[in-house]
Image (cartoon, rainbow, N blue to C red; front, side, top):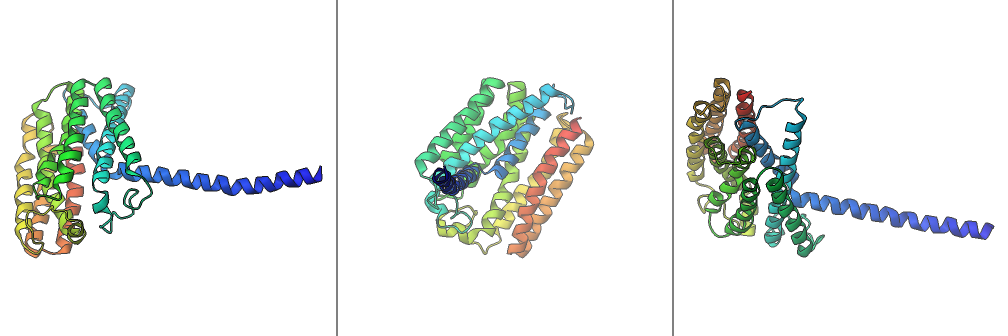
Length: 316
């Protein structure tokens, strides 16, 4: 009995390290898929889609409405899948460029931890399943619009980033579609309110993108990515452009109120956010340095969620 017990004990000791390695490998793969999905970026995108849904006529928010929460969770899940699929295709097509940039070189594809075939399978499953979920649960228009957004982001915006700065304009379209998708999911139609939300998010993106591109100019240059409206970094032209696009957002903040989407308090909060965004852009134009560019970037992070929340709270 004793030799048998010792043999069994030794086998158990050998199996434990194998199990530990398997668990570590599985955890690492989960982290890799998480990096493909970019949940932080996707979450912000899908948040605007939920706001678009809540802003639609006939939708009344209530913390105790279980059916409403079911709709919100489904919209959020479908949006995360579609956005995650788009982000994955973006990383597949840019895997060589990502390997040249400091902030992206350790992503799964450029680091060699995942083959692009596996990533393509993952992108296809997530993107299509997300669009089908939205189309089946809400309406075909919402599903089709979300899939169109994926195609535009992945196959128009992504390759154009190395060709011409017009990529920012192209990317601003799928970037602004989420609130319209939410509106269409709620109503089944492309109403004026949905287009107003689209327009606000569309103009918001330009200073946001350009501030990031200014801060990450050296990294982008190594990868051959052109995002700034000028070839040179040390010019004030980017600051002027940020001022122009952020300025548009101030009068735009009045439109949802006059369209009956939100109350006057929501309108004034949106105007205040637009003034803040414009002021940061003015400082960026005057100083044209790293600190002021980061200020525009952080102002953009504040502007969008506060504006969207102000609009939906003003509707209640």
